[in-house]
Image (cartoon, rainbow, N blue to C red; front, side, top):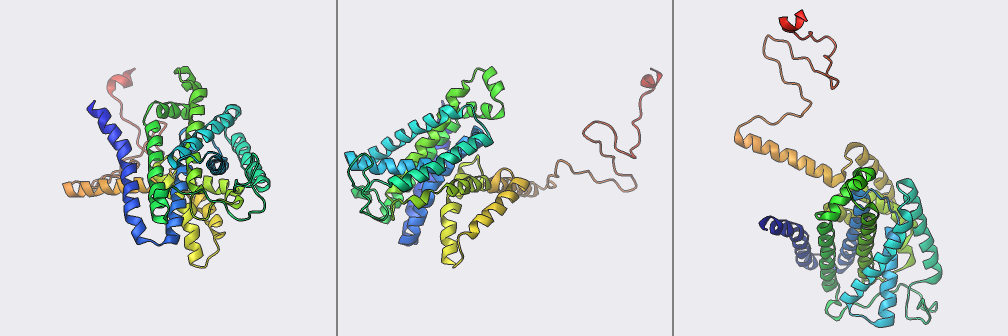
Length: 379
């Protein structure tokens, strides 16, 4: 019982502690413009987390999360126009709608994997961009779509009365995003997470172990799309509202590259991906540098990450910090620093260095043959 309580505290405590700290510290420090940027970064961190679950945990390459984000924003605007739901209930309804959409996408995608699934979901994102260009976001018009072409400009969802200012809405966004992280971590540390790990290793072995592969893949799609839909509802109420240009198909490619570069399987990698997606373009604009240069930098960073550190920036940083911690602990204890696994021990004065034995068990070239006992030699 104590172990279960400690695990729940560890899973729930870290995201909420980070969310509460960010909500309290950042608003008084930064201005209104940077609050809007950080709000968008928090929203996109949830989108990156959903993609990380699909690809990093289950092995499903989905490039349609930006499309699901747009569907979430569109649904939030349409439900508010039709029913005027309270904001928390509206976000829950939007998440459920996008979860159903995710299941509907996942059903035909169960027979696909790898590049084929990536191409299908990318075409979905491109098709949705065309649909939104012609239909537009709901802006108070009549009909099923609720769009009035005579009202140009972006469309924004009304904020709740207790979060009308940018500071209050940033705190609300960070809190909701923290809850989405708690929801994801609860699944990752529970039975779905263990099933996803087995499926990623081998679907055949997972089936042989009695895991319902179809069910848990649909659960992954539903969870990722639920969180992304809630993020779309939050984005719809941010300053500036929604426009079709925010959900271009190339954004899906940029999101995948950024998530791979930041760290696919880590929640901290999702946070870093949100920062790279939204904060870095604002920094470049402030410096007078074209944000299109980020595409080149993201491409170079992705190649460098895949070659040198498949775990991403967060994984590499964690590995280096762990090595530094072990070295400092060894020096504090007076012991020599731990050597790398493949290091060859130094030879004593007056002796030859020991020969390295390859992985196949045969002695290396130039090494002296092993001395056998007389009993073995007699045989």
